[in-house]
Length: 252
Image (cartoon, rainbow, N blue to C red):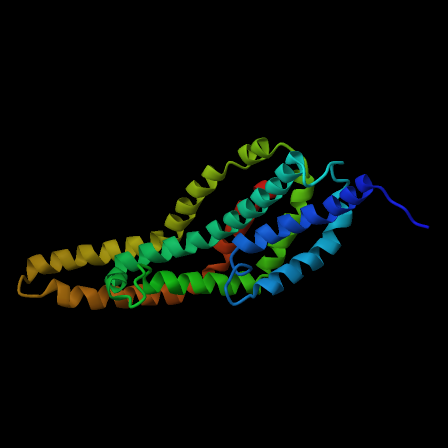
């Protein structure tokens, strides 16, 4: 007859439940995984399947009862780690969305936000660059890289480690600065091109004051911006790879 104690049962439950909670928290916050087109049951099923693969390599969980205050603190730790990793991945797409917003502002397409029937403020360029980044992310198997980064967190941030020390080591505020740095670097060619065009239009308005700058300038800036976007599309894979490595580096 096989017998086991309550302590052994708590240890088995913690060994499987804690990785499952961390995975499920990631799927709740990370882009693509948290999309509404992916049903909640599918997320739970994928998290359970990955838990079966990850849990044996996690190591021994602390010997405690999950219903105790210390056990609930461990569960909260897994939730925070999973949400923080998902937030880091979301910052990657914020880079391209911010760059698209800057480019759309320079092109003059920011006025479209006032006429958005959904009541949003995102411009057409921002939506297009964001969608293109998602497609490139899937093409380069970025979702698998994120799952691999989560599996690596069980070594860099083991279960039972000091949560505040771990989050302090991540320095999430620096990731916010990296978002603006990468976004500005992506939008810099468009900003310089639009600045040159506006300078030319300014000289033209001085030479020929009868020319309506608003009637001529908007088509020129929009056409130049569309051509620049068409030429720079093939070069988005490099910044996406760099940003993915940058935002996932603290977790490894």
